Amino acid sequence: MDSKPPVFKAKTPVKLIVMLAAGTVLLLGGIFYAVWVSGIQIADAKKSGVIIEKRFVPQPEEQIILGKDSISTRDKAGEYILIVEVKGRDGKVTPYTVWVGKELYDSLKVGDPYDVGPALAPE
Image (cartoon, rainbow, N blue to C red; front, top):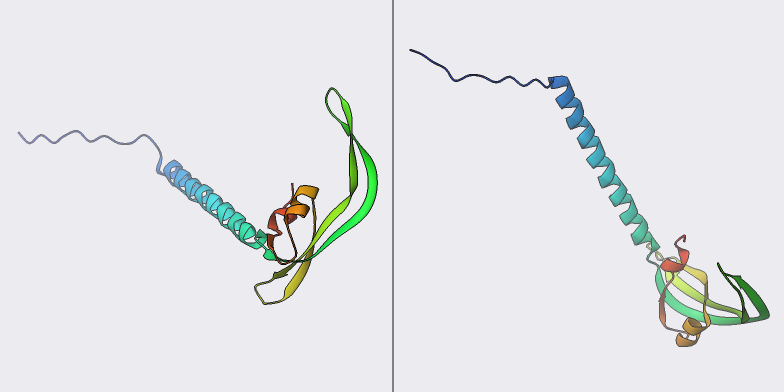
């Protein structure tokens, strides 16, 4: 007696399997592209340079802060500004103006390295 093992045939059509495989490849390709592009933007946002000037522009003002349950005020003496020179990939030097808080302004001095990238990123 020549008995062969039973053959099981898939009930899933080949067309569906091919479409799912193609969709998976496109989805993974899209994820890879998104990660790649965001990595380029992160590298471009890293703009380290040297502080060449510190400016304080006196503009005394009282700011009103509205909270969920309260209203408070804060006195501001003025604007604290850093001018940072950053060398580009092509060697061109570009000055950037960065507005900072008083604590950071007081902790830095002319000639210190400073990364302007986080100040350029949208919030």
